[in-house]
Length: 61
Image (tube, rainbow, N blue to C red):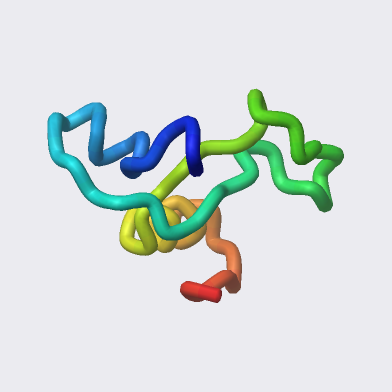
């Protein structure tokens, strides 16, 4: 979050939204790691959307 203080998905659309959460691109349960290349800094809204698309039961933890 220090490296990317703004949501990386919002930032791609030139919108500056502060980071609130970090998302594992490949989930730990599926063999993902805590390495930087498997993490993305997100706002709660983008994080929720990612999990909703995946069909996860995750809801703004």
